Length: 408
Image (cartoon, rainbow, N blue to C red; front, top):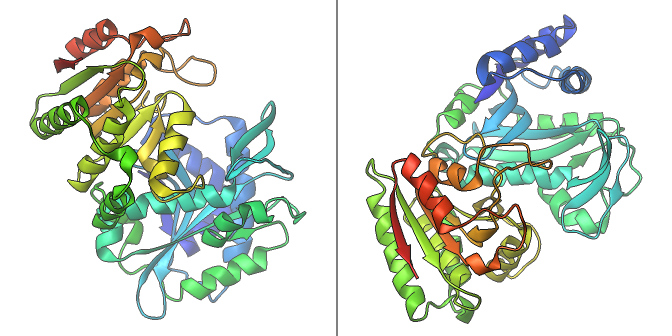
């Protein structure tokens, strides 16, 4: 969903009238049904004033499109600002701009992660270039309109309060800055030139309207990439009972295309290869054009198996296939074709940093997917908040009208 969508000239008028933040606030309430805190309202006001300065240029077409607060479907993420139009050859372009209020930051030793002050203290967050690039990669991999119509996405980040002190542009982050250029406090003219270079004509084809209406399905390129990653890697070969579980899950995923939900519970202790089955299933379902994700409470298994697939610990175009178990608290029913939950015994009741969001992670997974798989080892429940059990999953599956299948 796009909260604010107008032409460049209309956007400039809204800023000039000192009403841009109020307009966005009203639209957020109307379209998303939520109220906005004062800090977010202030950030809109400040960032849009800077974008007004950047776009106040005759060479940037008045009828280019401006979209603010675009909610990425199935992803729970928002893109701050998108400028759309055509280049000299008439190719559709969408410039994705991640906006930050930061005035300082420090590097970390983690891939694509920096530390900055947010609200009540210093927090580790994604590097803005990584963030912007990951949004583009998600759309390129999953939005059928983007990859079928050949819409070119150009991610970047603009930190209008942050001086160029070498932190965000250091070699540690160079790969992501190369994928999504970073514009800092003194770089307004550089950002303007970047926009001029790619948007020569206005948006004649309703680019963001088409993207918003695009069907969410994995692209053939993404599926082929996953398949090629697994070829020749011994750790992903299915053995004995692993193959039986895998084929059972594939069959149930196919059956779930009709109205009936299916839930598969797979019991297995350490060393039984549950994760190997999970990754094979993720790749196969994606190859079939289904929207599937690998889910785990902890980040460690996601990082390990992403690196085994790609051969790198750095962020790649498959990152969006791997998610935490707490992201489904507000996900509509049957958003996904399949959710594959590894280490399901570690699922919690509540989600969020303060464990105050949602009702139950098992419930939210089952509700969000037509087919869900839970790989369980109940002997490995180690924390009081671990609620993943066959009994708990059966309870919520029954509430959701899902048929339950169990393998040991």
